[in-house]
Image (cartoon, rainbow, N blue to C red; front, side):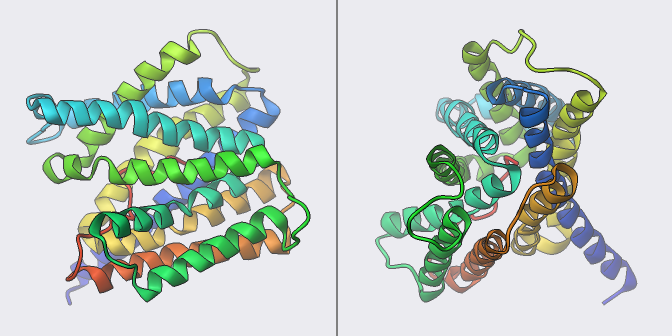
Length: 318
């Protein structure tokens, strides 16, 4: 193996890890905006999708051999990208950010990471095949991790509100839909094209409901910094470097490295926002991260038997 290849592999690892860290910090920035600047989650979702979508579509337009307009030439593809934007993108973005507003960035991110379990369940039903042992193990771990996270191991009470649990689980289900629905589009068109249009369409449609032209929250230097971070580092830059990492280390390895995202959200919230994260919280987080690792490895086992289950996503909603 040449030194140039070694450097590319190292670069791929760094880019994938950086993307995961950026996504995790983005969730903590959102928590800061909700808790300390009184920014409305729906308002933030609207502007994130509008601005990031516009940037990503522009990036897709100027890219060599761009397919940004081809996606609209076939009616069935146009319908799918509209559904992805209006249902998939809006749902995964809003449920995640609203879950943060009800709990915290760490808890919301970890709960959303059980989404791949719903993806596995969908493909098990679709393909009429029982899950393999590793997937059953992942299901048990996901339930265990969620139980520890929301109850701290006790049966008689929740440590976060019922609403936070509900929206966190809903966020995981939305992530599953967001992962499954655009699979055919992503086989025919580039990820920047699909995700860029999805975000822009989602932002425009959601704006009808949220009226983003009216300012939300208290705006000062800290607000602008957190808002800018979510758009640039938490969306555009993280998405770009994650895609670039796929060329060097592949989707499976990159997806495994993205399991760092919940840890990034938790550590940032503990250090920056003084979040009280107990031993049970950390334990539940690690158990759910192990779930994602097992499901990603299970894809390799099933690759020759079933269609690939798309655990990795075109763009993290975090």
